[in-house]
Length: 423
Length: 184
Image 1: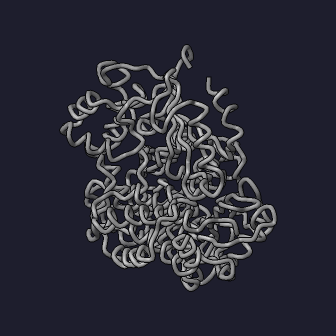
Image 2 (image 1 turned 45 degrees about the vertical axis):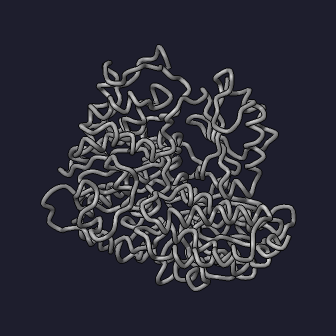
Image 3 (image 1 turned 180 degrees about the vertical axis):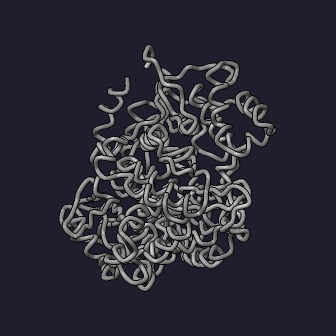
């Protein structure tokens, strides 16, 4: 269940059931809790049969884009003419997102089991778990679990006597948000600057080390063992037709009970904010919510009656993203909040594309000027213009990530910008 | 740690050792002793290309020396068949590799959006005033460097602070003096 709080609306699947239980961190404890029960079954399955179950379950990528996981796996060549790789994206750095760290630090063996089953499905011989550098305490827990899993025969040569071998390496990043973009991650893994590359070639054709590669998010891979164990229909008892299953919601900002909760997809966003998280503390009203991590469009307090799933949040004019609502109460200075978000992206732009490098940095500077009371009416026009220039014109979506919250804040809270300009 | 018998490092763990640590053992060169050779060889064994050991080795340099010097970059370049210029281009891309020495306690205060909505700026200012430093500089006694950090991924536990390889969460400005006391 959730951490540090839990709630009745939650579904406690294997994903979150053992959050907060230190026994789950050790191989012995994890086995007692029923762990590593699915791996032997997966070892007896044909790789394509595993992919088929995951495809039928409708599981979608939990890193933000929501691409169907089984479909992604099916792009991998069926008859390898050399090594395949699986990269587990644990570079969780989107402001607002802190769900993967709970998996890393509470149920590392669940992630390992998910990685192995996925690796078997895509015929990968090596899994690289790319963890953001700052996560030292959590990557240490994962690292120790991987070593234990090697010693227990769950990873490495001839896994559980099956004749199938697969290695896992935990690889630390070093403070680059853009390494969370899948091609940026592979650039970084290969010893380069974490610069994304233009697709095609797609990772399944030519990814890490020029070989077919699949990149999956931590939460995606951690959901795989239970799906393979219980079946696609079981997983579809939650969620919607297009967004099946459960999702970790990590909620932050002005909330009575911030934290991570496992909720069915399709949950009403208003219920997440008010029922599960208890609304804003000290009787304050909620002013705005950024529902899917800082790169998604802001919603006002009146727009929260929407279905918390991929299609529902898109209908509401925003995105589910990583399901990381950031809640702002009535006292929040929207311009200041937006300025801080823009500064993040300006800092994290890799600098390859002009629209992003210049756009993010000028956005941050102009917002700072407005916040300081030195803005002009022309600045608002410039910001709108930047939004156009920064959308859809770059190698990766980092520039777009500023546009979504910026444009929505300009449209929905224009009075706040204008008040600061007139001052 | 000192007198306990340590297990040999498992190769799977060679690329994931914490590299912002308090127990520094500064050494000029990285790969002249058995420990350095062991780390290099184990990291190399995990990848199909030598270059992929670059980030792990930059981390290793910082783990030993507290920062990554030009000399260390050249040494890594030599081992991995890269140019020093290339290694520098990578090392400077990543914020976590310190290109200059830092205080023994490297304090990073997250001021990104969720912490900004909390009291991050006040926490940051309090760390600066308590340590008597300006952002990024080393305190006179060599103990502290304080900087602002971009999102530390602990948004539900605002304000988040990282000191070397440790996380401090739900930090308020009032707690800052006690946190500093606890560091020594």
